[in-house]
Image 1 (tube, rainbow, N blue to C red):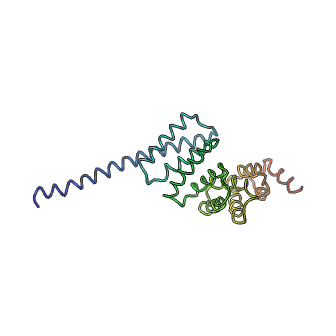
Image 2: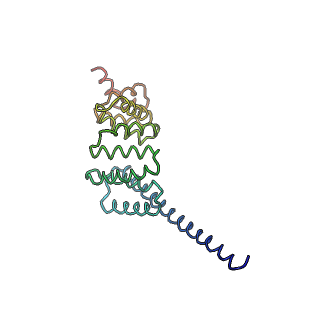
Image 3: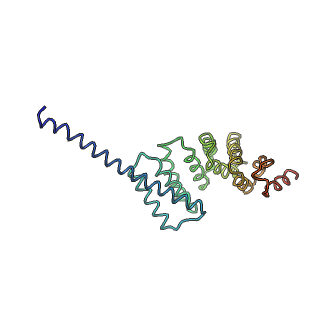
Length: 225
């Protein structure tokens, strides 16, 4: 093989390697931005604070950049959905959240967290008609052991308990049952706030984690009335 032929073979290979290297760098940068955004959002959630608009915009800008750099990765769009859900006071943010979550589901339709966040976005917008109940059922089916889906299913499902059919109620009850085994204090608080304490009280008696709390007496008094 002469030199010219070898050069013709090498050039496309080099170009391909250069493209793959650039793609890997962009994907890595996108992953880093998503990781940092996740840490920031988790900090807000853990401390129960609403970030200032400047901080919020900074995180959103990073996630938008990550979504451009890694268009096949569902994580940036999912995080953008979560980010917009945190500003639930304005309907346009809830609508944007559903748009981002929809894109994430196109790439990863089996994520229970994404479906749970879709349910939250629809709830914020008052979109609790069909297919809302189906979304709750699917969320429970995909993530029966996930603490965050248990919390959201309890929060949203108990709020709409009287409007749901048997499948929706079964899914929400399963989430409450599982949540009472994992984090009973949180589920009891949600159940009381939503006026459906009986579902959680069924798991209080004999639970050593609740022995020294108000819930033993609260649930006992409830059962006697």
